[in-house]
Image 1 (tube, one colour):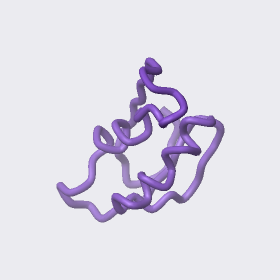
Image 2: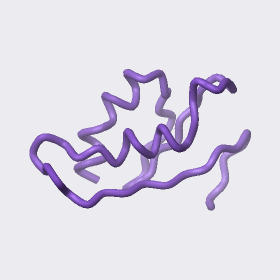
Image 3: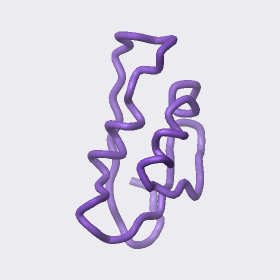
Length: 70
């Protein structure tokens, strides 16, 4: 959760509009273009913050047109 919160400004700066954050998940809304992908969002979410260099982080996700739990 702390890492996710630290990375949320970078997520928004890349144009991913955060609609909902729940524990360790983000729900974002973006234009349906090649400029946005769940892979890029996962990279942003799993970026180690300055206070945790080298932390073994990973994130995964999916794209859909309506909210659902995977």
